[in-house]
Image (tube, rainbow, N blue to C red; front, side):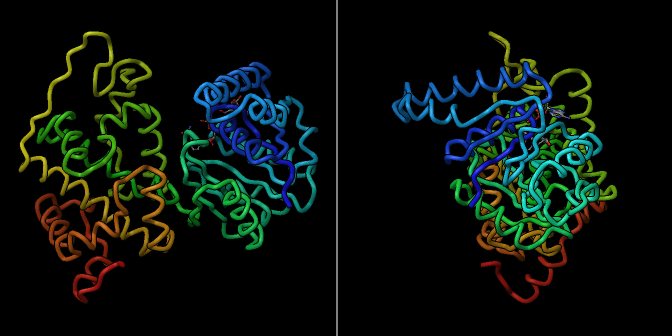
Length: 386
Ligand SMILES: NC(=O)c1ccc[n+]([C@@H]2O[C@H](COP(=O)([O-])OP(=O)(O)OC[C@H]3O[C@@H](n4cnc5c(N)ncnc54)[C@H](O)[C@@H]3O)[C@@H](O)[C@H]2O)c1
């Protein structure tokens, strides 16, 4: 029975993960090398929890209990009691590995050690361990306490019992877990790339402006946010970096090629909401153009982006990244898609998706638009996903 959880890194993700673990009655040791970061983390956690009291969702006793279970430390030696260690420090292989070298000898041989990395290979991070079979990825989404999805990512050498125990633990925190292969972007960050990439391409080609593309995806597609709104929300620098990392990790597969438009936005400091300017202008009294609400054009935009997303999801299934059920669950619970992409493919008709991919390929002659062979086979055999 897991009792004590150590969380390494008290930034955005570490603070959220500590909150969840303490809410589920674990003793939490929150480690960061910077004292001011720990202070800031505690302040923001106190503010978030007090808001729950104001909304009558928690009592002040509950808040005090949660905060009382979290000890903030700047000395790693205090993590030695931990049954599970979840690392959420800066996204850098060498810095993470340096920390693991200090962590492994401190904790019990049976302790599970996990990383919350979004984009690094779990296998490469594991290579620094004496016992790499105890290490895996446990990938939360931001904000961790609110987002239901957690990707469980064993490396090729992770022990099966470690994967199962880690998954049982995260399930006990009432999260929706999916098992993902240790391939770039895991599930969500791999499949979701074209939501941004194809929207940017349509914009770059001058077919529609951001407001019109966002309108089409929301109004006609049922997505909660449009791609440009979402990029502004995530930050163009952060979103661009994920795209670049995934592209490089796939040995420059053109399907993942990032957009120069977004790169220039990031370079110019037009990062989105956090700088008040991105694809939209968030400054007071700023002018933002209205979308062109032409249903036929909107449908073409939605069809194109959705087709590429479905092709990407089918490819992930073909490459055994996860089961079809978990791939669909990941997109609805991790990024709030209105439907699972494979179920959506069934609804549209797989032959239609193949036809649209082939039309795009015939027009552009780019490998970016190659149709996944699984879809082609399924269309030929009149098969469906579900
Ligand atoms: N922010 C997101 O949306 C998100 C989502 C999922 C996963 N992740 C992943 O979670 C991890 C953390 O991301 P974040 O957004 O919370 O970052 P962050 O910058 O908010 O926090 C990182 C923290 O790590 C601390 N730190 C850095 N080096 C350290 C070291 N050697 N020892 C101890 N502490 C150290 C820093 O002081 C900082 O507080 C990354 O691997 C990131 O890829 C981030």
